[in-house]
Length: 184
Length: 224
Image (cartoon, rainbow over all chains, first blue to last red; front, side, top):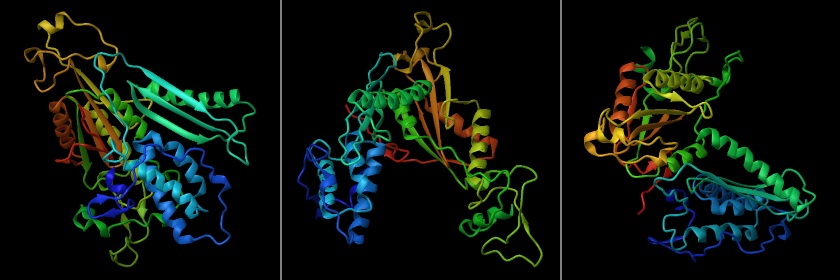
């Protein structure tokens, strides 16, 4: 998947000039409070969109760990400023981190003589997207201990309690598991 | 055939001029990434390999159903005498229903060759064969298995196909519009599939030889 990122990561010679990090997003980053300029810089927005598109390919195909950061960043596709860009570039620093020399990837491990199993994790935040007070739902599904399906999504419904938010998330997950059970 | 002799990029139907009829559908099913990853998770063990097959002149090889369509507008770059039209025998690039017709052809040919289409995902074709020779030692102490990951390796003299180390030969085929990805533990079966499709004659499949780590756009690597 390296080829997609190669023209976004700043390069000097053959060595990538990145300051590697191991977390996909700055902790407690509040992208909503970043002021949006009245005159949007169209060139910058175009670059931002291109970068998010490239990262989206990674996020959808091989790397579940950046899916939350992508779902947050992709809300600002049409009004991005340099402040948003800092968070997007943070993802690139993750790609250059040690232990991930070839970009991000999902590991498929083989476990011989194990029975076929599907396990899943679902989680949800509650009302943390200000001003709309929506929740974020997410799930990961594992097949034979290899991550197979994942999603992070801004909830379409407003949950009135954290229990409700978790249930919405579990319902999304159950729908996907039902499909995977048929498939396997 | 007329269409095949002309240089390929020149012959393109103006799909945007097509009239909306009952068969006006561009649906072509492609294998989702989830399916691909499930197959990789199920087959992540020694002995499984990936192949990439590509259909040459993919859409051009699919015949249009009977009673279908005169191409009313002259094709771009090809001058017709006045008052004449071309009748399309096969789909060409640009035609709205080309992907659908090609997909239907693929599923027809693959089913004919002996592969089962999954009901939960129509882009996946599976074939499973027993690899244990009857009357051999391995056949006697055999246990029933539920999933692929429980498969055990068997000694070479008990195998039906020599190049497959497991007790079952499994072939997964994924359709990706005009690409076909194969994941299998038995090379003989894959070659057999390729030969049979070629014998059938309606699809011209070509092996991509070289880097087998690229599997439908994602890089797969074997790690210890």
